[in-house]
Amino acid sequence: MTDLHGILLVDKPGSPISQAHADEPVSTELPTSHDIVQFVRRWSRQKRIGHTGTLDPMASGLLVLCLGVATRLVEYYQGHDKTYEARVTLGRSTDTYDAVGKTIAQPSVPPLTDADVEAALTAFRGRIAQRPPAYSALKQGGESLHRKARRGEAVNVAPREVTFHEIELLSFASPANISLRIRCSAGAYVRSLAYELGQALGTAGHLSYLRRLEAGPFSAADASGLPAIEHAAEDGGLAELLLTPDAGLGLPRLTLSEEEQTRLGYGQKVYLSSTVLAQDAPLPNSCSSDGWRPDELAAAYDRRGRFLGIARSQAAGGNGDGTLWKAEKWLAQQLGSLS
Image (tube, rainbow, N blue to C red):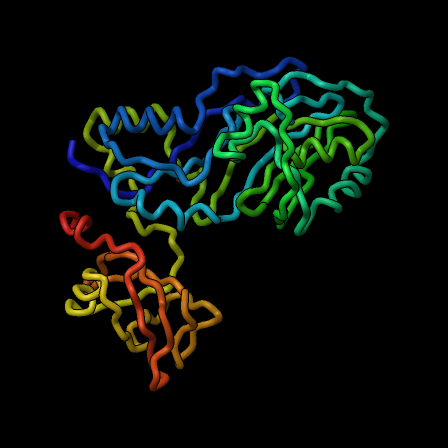
């Protein structure tokens, strides 16, 4: 199989919604995000594969993988907002804050109404300080927190600022089952939200179901399941499932001449007139006809519309009608064989 370069949207399997309200812990044999990377690596025989953000084993839904040269762009896809469908079950808390963990408390659930749940959710909407779970992939001293926690070490995780843009109460099935739709910033933990929501309602709570619906511009509705990906790889059709490496970047476009792209490819700084911006490209607030502020990013293309890489603005031009640019991630040479 030839090298593959692009974005693969995977619909990761997780615990089914039918188990969301079960009293027993869900299976711990569900595939991790790293397992899925290994599956795709084996099926595709591609060495360079990376993900743009993990999902917990029990979670299902959208996992965005970068293959081949697209792995060099992973960092530009990691800061996207995420959208989830979640279930919170009251009356039990676990050490992992989800249904996979060991039960640590089982207090009674007070009589609650939809209004009570809505009132409690108000405190979590917007920008908040959230304490991530001890069982998480965050690192402390160069080691993942979940490894320390599983060894029985005390893990002290400092709160950090995250944003819950939307928390919609889909339903409250009294006495203990809460269904939510959530849109949040990168780095926000729905598990922590479930744990803290239980406390805010005068009981305990854990995350019993989670499905990622969206990550930035990508949707689970467009993702492929593992059987479909394996079958496509066996038939030599995996490339047909890939989006282009620049799909969803959402950056302004620079259209370059051959001389300009060659110079940028050699690491030189190039002065570009503001007219190289595509008419329909989104522009940052800092960009105007007088040039760009330093440290803005744009996606570079040749005059046939082929993606070349990402450039970073250095300074506005002295005569006020353009900007100095330098290549940030230049992929033209590696992508040349795809033209």
